[in-house]
Length: 290
Image (cartoon, rainbow, N blue to C red; front, side, top):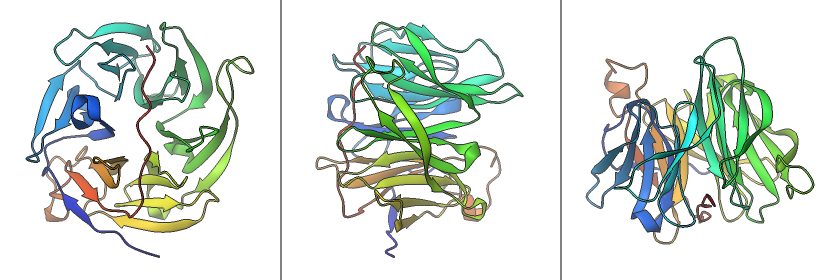
């Protein structure tokens, strides 16, 4: 099984980096420093430009008409561009022990975002429409994380990290089911000794790449669920990954220093953005229709 090497792009510029996404309209790669409430845009020189959007920035995705959609602590907001005001679109959570976490836009233009339960009450995965209306897609969620779609748009891959699984769901028209995602079932189970599944992305061949929090790696699983490639990272808290570059042939990986307030030498690069050349292309990001 091939092991793919990585290069540190930025150094440890973030505390809790998550949710990378490549979009040419905003100049390339953008991701969040979640607990700082910042959107980070990668510059060609390896530095980052920060845009503060609130106390918490869970996930960012492009919008069809320009600008971005962002998950905040308990709501979803939109902006028409980096210099435009961030305005509320949908309030999703009223429990102070739950905050939003990862998400993604779907092939039909809806925005899915899930919560992370920090108390006894579980959270959910939500679907947000272009007009700001929303509904619960999955309930009983503990740590909603990666969500990505197969190349033909017929399947969705989803992680609730607490289950230590990647699940697969069928994508259906909202006329069939207003949730848009149905028939959830296990795709891959992750051994606890290997870390906890976190963010994920899907390549053009249908392979699923998942970050392993606490496992110091990104893994690729083939469409039939077989492990066929590993990207080792020099830090343990690997949070998410996405394809980018002009040809979508580079794999960008975010990492976190959350809880490592005085990291030892082995974790000194935590919070850095890394990049690898995996030998396969990714899929273009899906924009939100709102």
